[in-house]
Length: 194
Image (cartoon, rainbow, N blue to C red; front, side, top):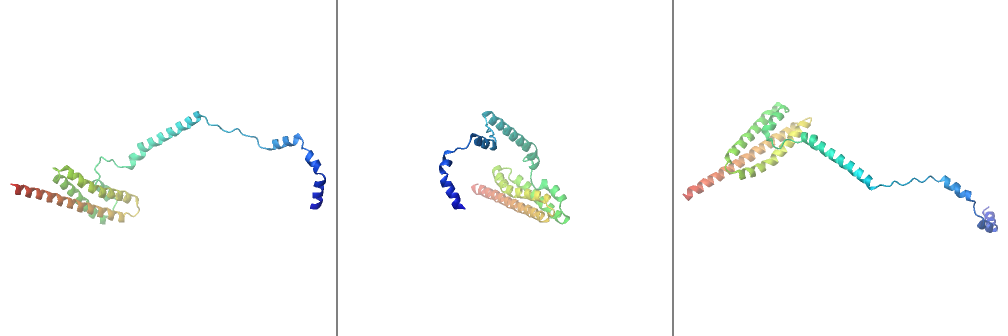
C-alpha cells in the first residue's frame, strides 16, 4: 500500500508544487487561534502606588508591634527584676514542698544583695562589675520562671529555679568575701604605712 502512495506522489508531484491553498484556509486558521490579550504594562505611577501601600502596611505592623505586642511581652526594664519581685508570683504556683526551699533561697539572695549594696557603697565601679556577674544568673532565672508558668508539671523547673537562687546566693557570698578581703588588705596597708 505504501508503494502505491509513493507512486501517486511521484506522478503528481508537479501538481502539488504548483497549487497553493486558498486564502480562506489561512483566515480559518487565524479564527481558530485564541485572541491576543494586550500585555499589562506597569507605569511608574503604578510602582509608586504599590510602594506607598507597602510602606503604609509596614508602618501599621510596626505600630501594632510597639503598641501592643512588645508592651505585654517584655517586662519593664526599669523595675527591679530579682527573686524578691518574682517570689510572690512563683510561690503561688508551686507545691508546698518547694515553697519553703524557694522562700529560703530567695530571702538569702535578697539579704546578700542588700549586704553587698551596703558594703560597696563607696566603690560603685566594683558594684557594677559584680552586678554584671549576677545578670546572667538572673536572666536565666527569669526564663525559668516564665517556663514554669507555661508548663503543666513545673516541678523540674521549680527545682532549677531554686538551684539558680542558691547559685546566686553563693556568688553573692563570694563577692562579699572579696569585698572583705579588699577592705582588710587596705586597712593592713594603711597600718603598715603609719
